[in-house]
Image (cartoon, rainbow, N blue to C red):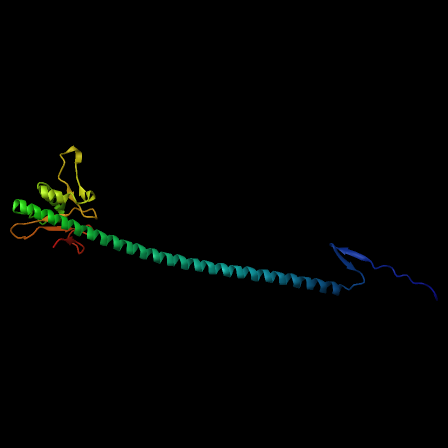
Length: 212
């Protein structure tokens, strides 16, 4: 009708699972908006995944670096142990030679007093402790020789007294803890022979040390 006023009813609102959809908007627009939201969410997830991969990669590098450090430390430790062992061996070899110098001095004093050296002709390293006892007993019987023996470290002299038996003469030992062997045959030797079993503690091997 001419002059009539038309009043439009307000758009109806329907609620579907907490999502508000206006009746005057197309369903296609609603779908497009939701798709845009999914794209944004997908982008965020991709960024997080990349960040996690980066952290894993960095963590892997740290493990490799740790392995390298451990390997270097192991190599250095091996070198230090080897050098320490070498220094220890050289020190003990010098100690043996020092003992020989003292023993030779004591033997010279014994020879000047008695006119001969202590007789011990047996060449048998298995009896080295007994040979060492013989030598110590004979040298201790001469005051001037005994004075020289007293300069030897007590750690290299062992006194045994087993099962309450009478105390036996002391034995002379090298720095590795093996009894020194002594040999002198008046018919074949010009001077007594003193022998250390060396580092391997076995007589008759390449690392034996003697005073000749």
